[in-house]
Amino acid sequence: MIKNTRLTTHAPAHPGEILRELYLKPLGVTVTQAAKALGVTRKHVSAIRERPCAGDV
Image (tube, rainbow, N blue to C red):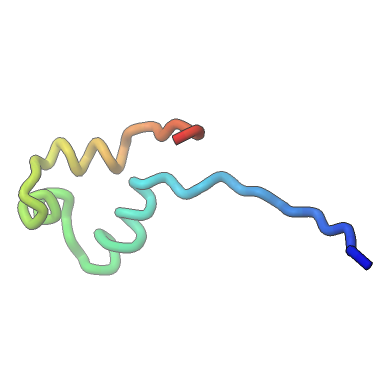
């Protein structure tokens, strides 16, 4: 017998939120430090943190 279950959906986490909450804050790393360590500009890291994310990506 199959039981009818409802699946609840939620919005996926924004990449900037993941970057901030899982890496920058716990490690005490600034955007500038992260950019330097990754070999990218500060502008690129900031764009990840701030850019709106399309829901269909």
